[in-house]
Image (cartoon, rainbow, N blue to C red; front, top):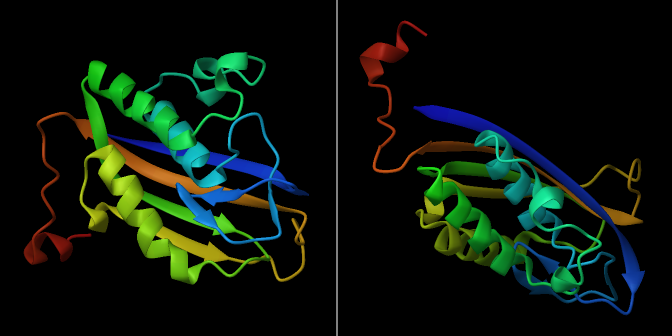
Length: 171
């Protein structure tokens, strides 16, 4: 059995905060404003995972008005989401994440983000895709950073078998 989830998050860039994306600290003069560390990449992934399993969203599990999550490390929260999925007999199949940011340039940090997320989720690095794009000066226009995520979840202990070449002829 396979399910698909979608997640999205966005936060405003502000002075005096560390920029963390995909669990990786990124050198930047501004960071993202939020109750936790405001890691939009991990937040989008958590929402996609929770949505695919019909377990609510991150606001339900980690309310922004709860002092326990003030300044929280989003990777630690992701570990809790992975545990929630496991309890419901689900695990991540794969995730495709897109970061939307005018700045900073992120390509050098993407391999580390993929490794960190894969490690936390208990999957191979090739099961995690992270891409970055800009909005060509439109939309967020440098005021914030957003992230989109599409993921699959599978029943624990099950493996997704790729279609054979002969099956592809029928698609």
